Length: 231
Image (cartoon, rainbow, N blue to C red; front, side, top):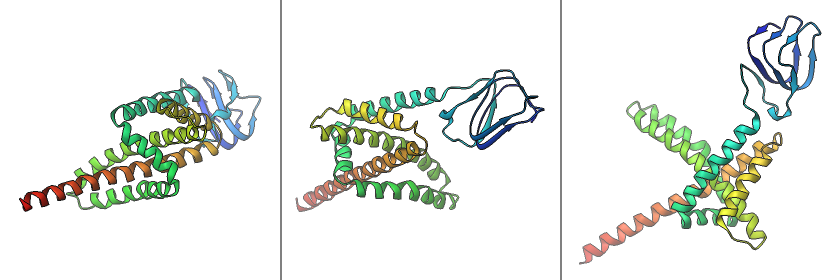
């Protein structure tokens, strides 16, 4: 109920524009109930946007980026990272997808443990003071791992669908998984739930795969040392 130089983007259960409101741009909202005083001034008009998907809060600014722009950017970024992963680590990527399809429960549990346990571990490391630099590196690695795990989860979803259709194409699987999750993302609540599930599955399978690589290399080193000792 006041003056705003730019536009307004609001999401809440109930929104009301008072008589003293003077909005210099567009008023875009998503609410269960909405009222506007006839004395209010909105230069850019009032638009109901269900694409806000129930986001609670108010954003004020001169320009708005449509929801689909952010989604499109996410699709392109995920496809780009997925392409890099498939080209650089084709065998490992396939194993991650197979692991999700073969043992989704284990992948999901491990993913949840990594998602929740890693930040706790990093905080404990940072509390030692001398471990702060290590914690900062760990935070960066954690963020990258979340993105990689999310993309692997999408790829695994696409691979699972193609397997049900007796088809096998890693590029189609990547495209299908990324587009499917992006499309479901427009559905309130369900989109966030699916996104979380895909992240947990992909992150868990990715983590198990990395641990398997570590164990394999460690076993080879032990074997090499035993061979040298025997000689």
